[in-house]
Length: 335
Ligand SMILES: [Zn+2]
Image 1 (cartoon, rainbow, N blue to C red):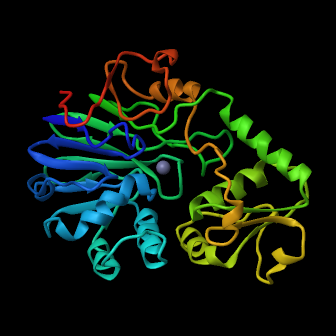
Image 2: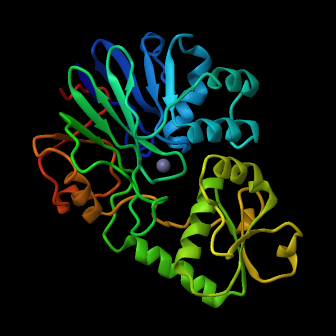
């Protein structure tokens, strides 16, 4: 058995891939960066994709035509559809798009909270709350490994929170967090956005599709203003997938489609992934969990679980009251 952080170098700390060997099978947990070593690339038996953010899938997009034909790729139906949608709508800059769509159409779709028997090990996915379709994975083989991907927790929102059983047994817990932030970070970013709502009668937000929807949902949850929130037409394909997969991107009559290009004349908050480039504002709106949220996350696991940390942006990790942990480094086996 072998577990290593992979290509989580300092130059591009956000990029996420983990490589592990379990019951003699080589498994990638997310695939953020391309793999240059062709022997390693061909050795991969199974790839799990936690969600459709580029820092978790770009390597897969780049390398998928060079994988073995029998390399299995698994994720949720929503994540698969979003990956294919991002490709077919030109939102991922890569050559051979049509060929890649054909290869990635073979991604196997797994449901949340369902035990799958993969012969060499068993697999269960759990909702991580980070973005639509995002999942954590429990792999049960010679050892039990739980990998989080990015996770989110938001009180009173089933959609924006991770969902796991009270008691999970794992030998290793691989925590992946591009942000470990102070407990007040969600409040801070919402205060910032609320201020904008109060200050301007109209404003435009340009962000990636999933972020547009998350921002709209947070605004609808948090704002008491009767200001309307509008999605622009370029988001329609994305919203269609969400609705078909059981999510509700519209809410409380506050969020609507701008079907009449009213953004030119009317007041409101307008969201688009392609228009309003000059208004691009990277809202740190909190798709991640805070330090205190990590502590309550750990309480779902046996106290003997070994915590393996992937890449963390938080500078002073010792500030977090973590149990014993190990930091995963590029290419170094932790087991
Ligand atoms: Zn993410």
